[in-house]
Image 1 (cartoon, one colour):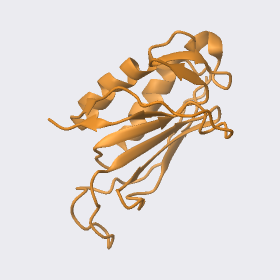
Image 2 (cartoon, helix red, strand yellow; image 1 turned 120 degrees about the vertical axis):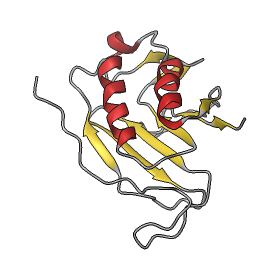
Image 3 (cartoon, rainbow, N blue to C red; image 1 turned 135 degrees about the horizontal axis):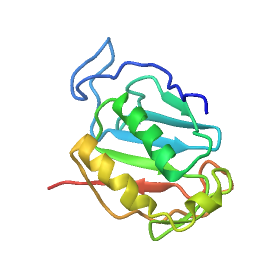
Image 4 (cartoon, rainbow, N blue to C red; image 1 turned 180 degrees about the horizontal axis):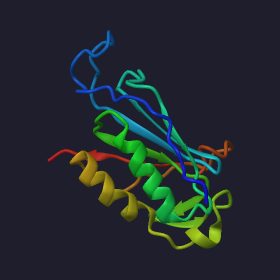
Length: 156
């Protein structure tokens, strides 16, 4: 299997200070992660919706097992600015934190996978935040929005 490569970017640095001519970020900072059948992307935005650094992306691993996808996400998170919370878009159905279907990634790999628990542990370690339970999302017509699983940070 060919080695997966991630687009190189630099992180935005401290989120409450001006950086490279950009205005200071308005908290909370949200890291959006888009898990797709072809690519996995991540970008950080502040409360005003301003992009805090260039988007980072990596090809979706083949085969797209949960372990391989989580490893790719970890590399993208490491290349992203610090954040207060995350929101994950997933191309399938997730109920109660568990994957029901993932047609673009391979349902046999993902069916029954505890998505929220699997994402929560590495994100807690990487960001120092605690993950709350996911909110419910209405069914979307856009495949990239279908089964988005928002994960919010709780404040101590």
